[in-house]
Image 1 (cartoon, rainbow, N blue to C red):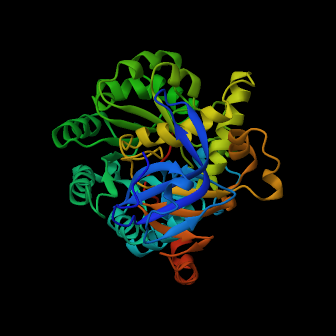
Image 2 (image 1 turned 45 degrees about the vertical axis):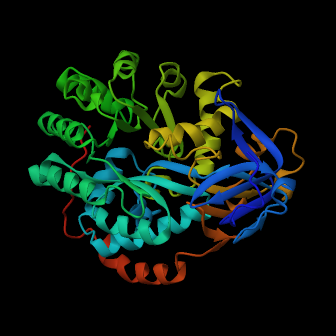
Length: 454
């Protein structure tokens, strides 16, 4: 589609760039010397630079030497946990939870959550992330930050059964209150923490609420092989089988991690009634020395989308989805013993359309095409570490870095221009967060919000 110069001025035109596009078979390709026309937050056209030369626009970006990609999506994180970055290092999973993270999280205030979310959103915008799926506490504060920062997010208020029915009720109230907020940039989910912290009755009740209110469910499950083996020993069922018998598997489900998914789970996942997706965050699995990773190939074979994620910065130390994309490709090659899997183009597919579908936004984001929301990042490939370019997909996945993102756009609004953030004052956030850290990280009280014993 080539817009006419007689049209009213476009809101934004990005020209002289290479655009990542998808064909009707979802195969990735690249259009060179291309232009993107944005109007009312939506991509109106992807055309040639020459084709927009005479088209009036409120704003123009010359993106020479840059690649335009759909904004990256962090499909599972705990954004406020950036406040705990580096606090619990070189620990097994059980000690990480019980000795550090859950005692510290018992100190959390809504102010801590808001400051952490602001810092996290700044980090993600600078890394080309335009949307994230968050699962945490005091989520009203996170919703406020999303609205103010200009990002897009799928948000859920996490709960444990130890909180009583009030936890589940708060999760529902949050989801209903914020669904469609921030001019539609916020979508919501019910957020039971995991099958090992939420009992069958609560899971079944959550599934019923999800069906009644048309809400997805976002939770951790089969995070690692130990959890699967413990669940089998205690309940005679894998965590995925627990989700099936409680009805969770028959909702629209975003399942975090899944490195403990075993062969007997695959048929259940394939037959699930709703939209089932898994978010993979390989850096954390390597840090915890888990023996397995998300079985991306097996999940893809049964039609389950696998989106890319970072988890929280307390375990990953980073919210860099760019790194997750490269690690997913490399770890999958190693785990499958096959250098032909996962290819760079397959990794880009997981980073774009599959991640969009994972968070329930497959009809609106994940590709740069007419009618899609204008969530776009511009990546500079003129640096020495990205030259020469023999295979553009490989350059993007294995040579480019998040620091090569020059501009980040959500709904047609520029949130970062030439590496300068426009919606978040990072120094002010850091100063205030540093003042709060002593009270936040204190563990002398001996409390913890939960016990990890799987």
